[in-house]
Amino acid sequence: MEQSLIILKPDAVQRGLVGPIISRLEQRGLKIAGMKLMRIDESLARRHYGVHEGKPFFASLVEYITSGPVITMVVSGKDVVSTVRTMVGATNPTQAVPGTIRGDFALEIGRNLIHASDSPENGKQEVSLFFSDKELVLGERSLDSWIYE
Ligand code: UDP
Ligand code: MG
Image (cartoon, rainbow, N blue to C red; front, side, top):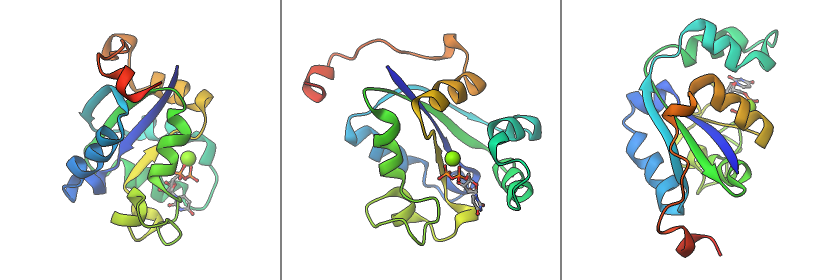
């Protein structure tokens, strides 16, 4: 089953958008398999965003993601990686269409509110960076048959 690591970034927490963003995921029917409030330290930030090391925005990205508490979540289920990415919208909020999280709530790329894994492989790898197996609840829900055929 696919897993997507979602981070509600420090701006989402400070702006009080945690509830509205989680509501969208819940309303869609997605299954939340893990969730915690935490601070990301510099070394975790550098590992999580390692693929961007050396890019011009890397230093400001690490500063941004470590600047305050975040909510980290795991969403699990069929096709969740692409489903969540579509809900999140384009990386640059100026290009994110209305109806997406970034298209409805954000204006600038350096304050784009939310991270979501971009492939099933990265999803599993990112989840393991932030969550131990014991912190995940992966069983079926009684309502799954009303959401998945
Ligand atoms: N970012 C930035 N400037 C850029 C590109 C990216 O500040 O020119 C930040 C932004 O917060 C983005 C994150 O780096 O969400 C990771 O970039 P990526 O291309 O992986 O975008 P995402 O997967 O988050 O849509
Ligand atoms: Mg990315």
